Length: 370
Image 1 (cartoon, rainbow, N blue to C red):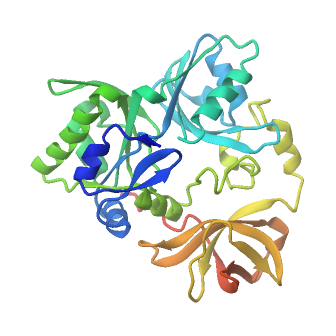
Image 2 (tube, one colour):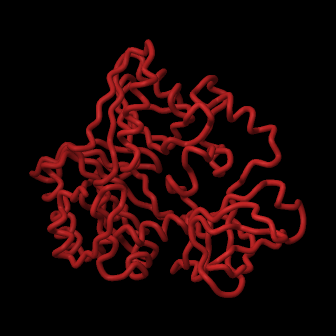
């Protein structure tokens, strides 16, 4: 079990820990509900240094990433990032990634903690004749996320002009804060459904930045609350953001998972292209839907979704969340089980009891943009 570099600081803040993707991670500091509400209404601070970081550079870096991922990174310019997926030949999702374009021949990639070594090996396996260098920087980087409606006010005050006009999915490279050297990448991205940033920086600067941000926030009347994985999961569920191993995995395609907008068929061949083209013509493929419990009960991952006594799918994620204040879940169900009109009358099998659920629009929650 790997420990976060700042595990002692999290313990001092009262964190309760849990195993996740081979890491001992903070689950919560006060309560999942309190931390969830803090992000929705104000500010939350996450240590997500378990995430993986790769670098792809060289003459053919762009061509290579075009081949091993689904989105069209030719649309990127230096300073912009893009969400995409890495597929197997059958179209299943090996991992979802964010690609940051540092330069025309240099890309920084964030991968999931449990998959970073798989993605690294997969890239090397498919290097072919591409002139690229692929390196794994996971052991050398920390990653923080500051999320919430007041996140940019704090970040702009802390870092200054370098991030002042940062738009969604753009990033800035920072060389210093005040008189301190903070070589880090600050991206206007996140996994909460709220505004905010994710910050990547070398491990040797992590402790100082973490404590400096808390000190700065307190001195400038920002109520910055540490948040754990529990709130991160309820936040991303309300925003219907996929979690690998749940909504996406190696036997689920991005078309089934409602992620077709991140698949560029127009760019031409990429790994999984032919399988996804074939899937387009199928009518029985699973599709991702939102469910809400009508009466009582909590639906969880892997619970069967039934219709007329037959199993037509399974829940991928589910719980009762604070903002929606209802038991909700995401599920993959057969497309032909959803009629064009009327109620499909789904139930979910919860501890041998069928619980009535209704289809609901996803995302369950969408922040208002001022």
